[in-house]
Image (cartoon, rainbow, N blue to C red):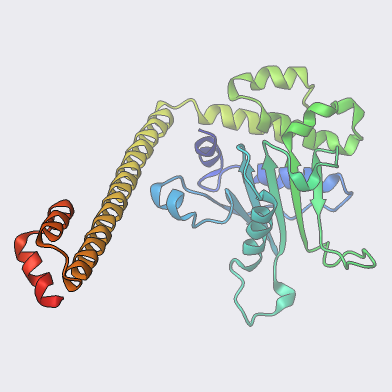
Length: 300
């Protein structure tokens, strides 16, 4: 249901200001200037072709004045996710930017990865938000850091500190992360318990809760579940048929090999003038017909 809720909340160019607010909350913790407003968004559609082909870039792509944003929300643990996050933001660098254009006009790109798990690459880092930029290896001097950066928000790390323990510049992001992390029915209680005041977080909570109210949304989700069940049944059927075919092919190959070996032994026996009784016994044991025996005699 998570992707469905995300899609319904931001699809149709809705709530672009919330995406802008999310990115600005990330940038605030490093004292970076706010971004221009996100003017349009494209959200990953949840349909069978997209599930199979993953044609979109991240869960959401936002565009503003000379800036592109990629947002990926991933709840379940995924191996080598850091590679995926890097590829996602790299793909957004070239969206709507044609080769041969003036490279000075290439948009700035910010990748936002909100994760329900921790990354092995950041296991030594206690803080729940990490900004990744390029740097020259030996000098550690950053390289195009003001133009390209990726943020990895590891939600489980919220457990190891409290809001009060964090510097004030983290509080806005903390509020938004609490909304992303909590179950929708618990949003009101989370807002009260965490003393959430960030207006972007409060509006996100309201928009998400309104999203799941219409019965058409739930019906659509249930319909999608049935479609995926049918797809899974079809895939299981195809896999079973392929396994049966492979087993039958292996059995036939073994039988053919056994027949060939028996015929070779029988041919050697005929050439060696073995007794008729031995040749007959070998024929019967190998299941070779008298007609085939006659052919082997000719061959011998």
